[in-house]
Image 1 (tube, rainbow, N blue to C red):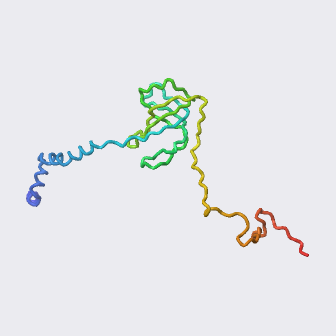
Image 2 (image 1 turned 30 degrees about the horizontal axis):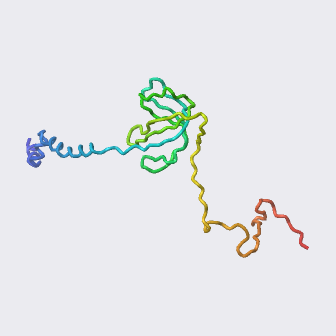
Length: 192
């Protein structure tokens, strides 16, 4: 008993009140946390990234699917951004695009060519969502290769001159092991 009385005397009064379960502590927490709650409510998520592409329907949703998805083999999307906002591009591929269960897709068939728009919201659990599509003519040509960057033309400083060496003499085309550059053995010459 003596020991607990000694500890009670050593603990400051405001800490002892908290240990007894007074209700002032939750009120203080509410007062300090309330501004944080209001600040968090005021934040709006960033707008989604929106992309348009073309592709071929490879698979339709199962009838009555809870989370329907349409599989589309799409063309490459050069301007696609990752979740950090860096442009990384997306290669041509077949991938699922979630759609709203209420969306009517009855007019689509496997093999249909479509132009479509989808959104990416990286802060959500399922970031992709197909928002609209339009059926294209069956004659529409699609390209399933990644767009290539235009080749750069080297400047005059970067150009390598092809021809004879600067001193005008021809170089010996024989390697140190006695083979010519084309890999054949050097033929002995008959010297007079």
